[in-house]
Length: 88
Image 1: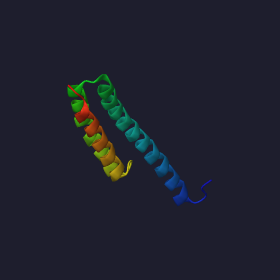
Image 2: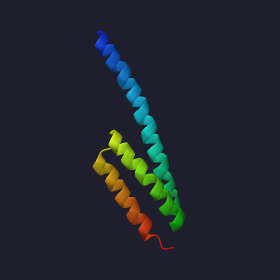
Image 3: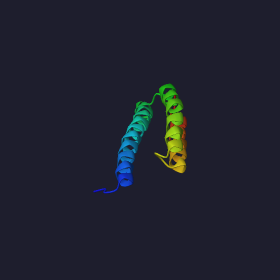
Image 4: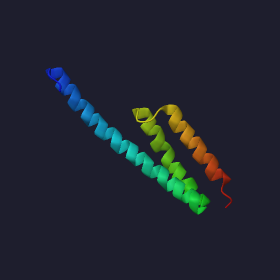
């Protein structure tokens, strides 16, 4: 348990940041899920649109430090190649 005033404040800040990061991570997962569902359904136009919406969300999360930048880039790259591979 934190004893000093600064440690108590740090604990509050960490809790607030954790909640924000959880929300951001969950939001990104939702966008990724829509892309995955469109890919599995074989709908190329819907998958492309979902990817177009998911890419800025992933990069924004990477910019905020929720994901590493390379992780976000890798996910976008792999999804883009999977969307491209769909035979429309």
